[in-house]
Amino acid sequence: AQSVTQLGSHVSVSEGALVLLRCNYSSSVPPYLFWYVQYPNQGLQLLLKYTSAATLVKGINGFEAEFKKSETSFHLTKPSAHMSDAAEYFCAVSDIGSSNTGKLIFGQGTTLQVKP
Amino acid sequence: NAGVTQTPKFRVLKTGQSMTLLCAQDMNHEYMYWYRQDPGMGLRLIHYSVGEGTTAKGEVPDGYNVSRLKKQNFLLGLESAAPSQTSVYFCASSAPRLAGVLKYYNEQFFGPGTRLTVL
Image 1 (tube, rainbow over the protein chains, first blue to last red):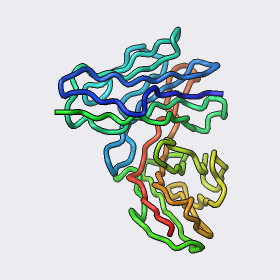
Image 2 (cartoon, one colour):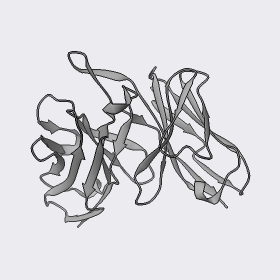
Image 3 (tube, rainbow over the protein chains, first blue to last red):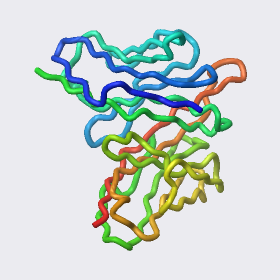
């Protein structure tokens, strides 16, 4: 069965610093992976996705993630944090074992704080 | 397109009361989902539907019922609300997208959420 682990429930960075949010997955088959962002009092919005094409995936708002099969990781990065990046971030993997119900398995989430 | 909409945005119930949350999508998606979000627990799937007239249990279905009478709507019902059901509820929809030869993935689109408090 697939699973997702996000390392660190809270990450704090200074404005302009590198953002690194960690996500490790467990899957017996090549996975489809997603990063979602949730701004305060809003729903989840897709940042980027990995669907077995390029291993380095670029998303919205300057974020990118690299799929590393050997490390079973899909970490999210942004070179320079902006105050508007403060939000909760979720990593998710497709639940392929459920015969295409489209279900996703979510990590516990990481809250990103950006300090001025 | 409005995408995924949820009604109501906020609700306060007393223990034992019932209510229905409505989710609507205008993207002609086959699949729809109801989640609850609680602090430190991420999103947990309550029920889902892979098409009109079909529903299935997710990870935490107890105390909830759902119906999908129309493709664009997915209703979540609480027959007898309990304080443990205080949460933020999200609806999502998706449709298969081609990822390769005979390979598909699903990108879920989320509604804005309903904040429910049960006293």
